[in-house]
Length: 241
Length: 256
Image 1: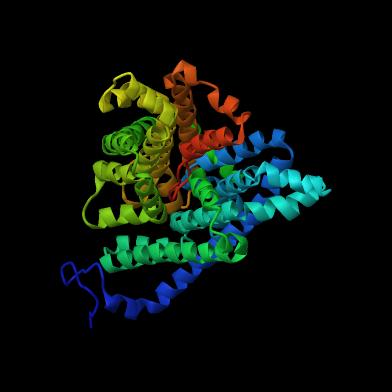
Image 2: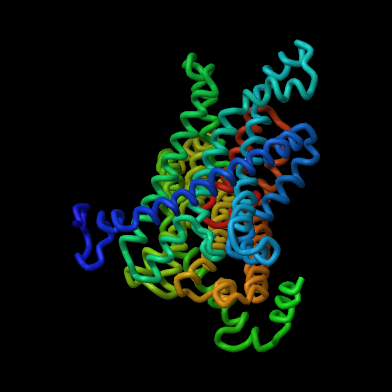
C-alpha cells in the first residue's frame, strides 16, 4: 500500500512507504550501525584530540607539527585510507572506525586549539593574578572558556562523520551507505532515497543535540545578552575546518 | 606483509601501467575529470562569491550552503545521479563540482567581504567605481584566501573522484574498488597508495602555486599579524580558518 508521496513512475518510485514497511528491520539495523559507528568514532577522536590540543596550546612549538601531521592525514582520501588500512586491520568495523577517527581528529584538534587560544588575555591575566598555575588555569579557566569552540568542533566532526561512514561500503561496513549501494546495484530507487534521507536526518539530529548540549554546558552565555560579539567570533570558528 | 609485497609486485608490473586500464591512462582520466569539476565549480562559485562579498552580504548564504553539502554524503549524490541514468565521467565531474563549490564560494565571500573598510573607503576617495575597486583593490587583497579556497576545492575534488568507481566511473579509484571486489587486497593497497600519492602531490603543487599568485606585499603577513594585537590575531586566524572552510564526506581540506 504505497501511501507515501510517490513522485516517479509507480514501478520504481523514489519514495515508497511500502519499502520501509517491508525492509524496516534492515533499515533499522543499518541505521543502528551508522549511529554506533559515528558515536564511537567521534568519542574516540575527542578523547585523543583534547590532550593533543592542550599539549599544542601549552607548548606552542608543538602546535605546528601536530596540525601538520593531522593535516596530511586529512588530505588522504578516505577510499585510499581504507585500502591502506584494510590489509592491517582486516575487512570490517575496525578499519572504518580508524578511518573515521583520523578524519574527525583534525577538525577537533583545530577547533579546540582555536578555542584555547581565543581566551580573552584579560581573563588569563586575572587567573594568573589569583595564583593559578599553568595546568590549573588550563583545566579551570581556559577549557571552560573554550567550550563553545569545542562544541562547534564536535558538531562539525559529527556531521561530516555521518556523511563519511557511507564510504565504508568498500570494506563492507558502511552503515546506511550499504543500503545506498545495494539500492544502486538492484536499481531500487526507494532504497537509495531512504538511505540518503536518513543520513541527512541523522546529521541534522546530531547537530541539534550537540547544539543543545553546548547551550546546557555554558549557562553563563545564556544569562547575559552582552557577549554577542563573542558568539560571532565562535561562529567564525565554525569555518575552522 | 604478504599483501604489501603483492602491492609492490602489482606496482612493479609494467603491464599494469600501460594500456587502456593502466595506471597512466587512469591517472589521466582522474585528472581530466577533476579539472572539469573544478572548472565547473569555478564558473559557478567565483563570480557569485566575488559579487556577494563585494556587496557585503552572503556570509549566511555561504554558511548554509557549506553546512548542507557537508551533511550530504558524496556516495549518496553519486548513487542518486547514477540511478537516474547519469553515468560516466561528465556526471562524476558534475557531482564532484557540487562539493567543490562551497569552499570556493565561502572563501571568495570571506576574502572580498573581509577587506578593511578603510581601504575600501580610500578606494572610493580616489574616485574608483565599485567594479574598479573590486578588481584593483579588493580582489588582489583577497587573493590569498581565494587561492586557498580553490586549492581546498581542488583537493576535495581529487579525493572525491575515486569514489565514483563504486558506481562505475573510471579513475584511480577503479584500482582500489576492483581490488576489493576481487579480494586482491594487494591491488587495492597499490591503488590506495597511488590515490593518496596523487592527492598529496597535487596538494603540494597547489600550495606552491598559492604562494606564487599571492601579491608580494601580502606574503608572510599572516605570521606577522599573529604577533600583533588580539584583533589582528583574530583576523589572521579567520583568514587561516576560512582557508580550510569545509570538508565533505571524504578526506581533504588541507592546512593553510
